[in-house]
Image (cartoon, helix red, strand yellow):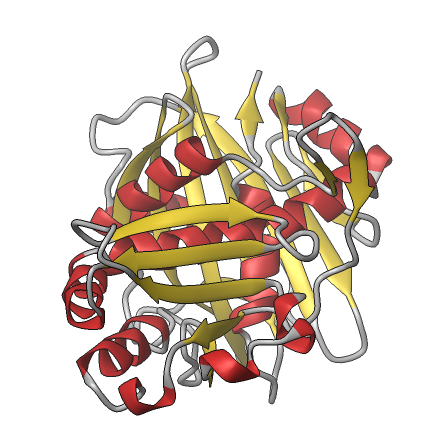
Length: 330
């Protein structure tokens, strides 16, 4: 819950990425595209400090286990380099943390910059009077560090969806649910009814999907794990499995985690867990957002899920989860 609230604060505070840079005289200069893989962060820190408290703290914060995916994966892939190696080859990386000390800094703080050497780039300067003080500071502000780079990864996905939208699907969602969501090229509607829509992007090995449904707001306990899981199972049973009488359901081996957040002045109930297929051995992670359309007294739910057998799932889930964050109820 705490992490979720900090994520939202970071979204509001820092905004989204841009693709060009204006100079002091108003001239526009275009930057090269970023390098590096999704979920990677380059940490610039003197090598002797990698095994000191500051280096250990960074590793614990950034490589902690990503929640609710079947195989263990770190939240971020951390690449540590010493200052003398921080040359042009690394300056174009998508996500950078640069540590600097000076007597002019009375206390540690963050300085966040966008598109310094490439675009869309996030550069977090962590400055302070000493590396020891920075080490203590980042441990205290660890949730904010994670939130900054989670948001950076989402921003890149969302920008692609804005630039290359699947217009027909976006319009179909708007018409049926009185809501908008950014959906990029490649997603298709697999099945729909009056109050349900299943959308997915399929490749030979990976399936990334969105499940959108709505139901009347009648129960006071609607925003609870028990109620939302019950409603989820009612709707996702419409998604067929690969064999006769098989269908999607919610795995209760590891029960979904429920949390709540305020985002864009709207309350959301969030479930994060695993889905299974009844009578067939397949499944994967999901995250769902539920909110109230007050005008129509209707609950709207948008869920992101991934099926990627034998593959790492963190980046695939982040990609489709980013789309859920674009939900706007009209």
